[in-house]
Length: 133
Picture (tube, rainbow, N blue to C red):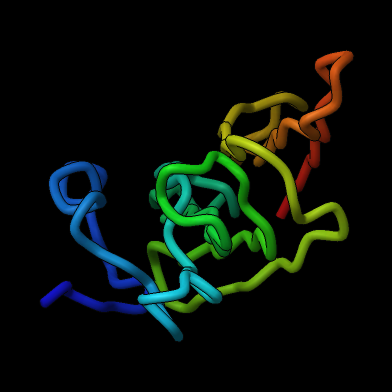
């Protein structure tokens, strides 16, 4: 039996250790009709309070784990100080190999979030979404 959880407080080491075994939510495991998983995870201070926050990129893998295609991609940020979650629904929320990157693009005290999603087009196009809390 697989372990199930909904965005717990985890360290980067814990996430790396268990990410292959854990699922966020699975509605129909047999048909993979709704296979919501943590796609990527980073830690960094994205709200500027000086405490590392957990940044989750979650999504549905409708064709199973073997396929790099993900839809219903959603960003979830857990405040390191309050442990509260903020959900950010993305407009362009489907594609291949979505990743999250944290960096200080505008040189302030907080890191900003950059999400990249390969569109699957022949020309190598991708969607880049920039988020600043």
